[in-house]
Length: 196
Image (cartoon, rainbow, N blue to C red):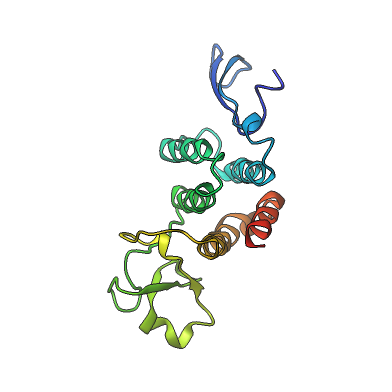
């Protein structure tokens, strides 16, 4: 079963036991071998490893159907390097949201407007407009435009880098530091390679 049970593979698993807290048996069947599909692409493999590492932050036996569907969507695009880096940033945003630490990027925290949102408060996780954030720009995080509603156009490597910096800050602050953990090594390598 080792090739089937690789981290990142999509499987159907059926667990059977007489009672929920007793030792049972499980049957596993492969649906899609995402791990095997990424073996030839080191960056895609790092992305897969980052996703599987970060999903360990989810509470055990707590269903997250929305994040499950988003994860399958992102994994389905790991063979397209022009798309998956931005999708991975959005996946990390969805992870934060699922765990109760979602970012509010809909309007400015200071003015309530939704024009020229270019910053995010590192404390509240709320968007800040260009005019309201100007005096504090050295303390604010950059908001890449592909993460704001209604924005379209190509996503640049710089946008992706800023997106990873944004999500990484809040994943560390809310999810990892309270547990005495740091960002997965695979994620840190991936971000540095994508920035190069």
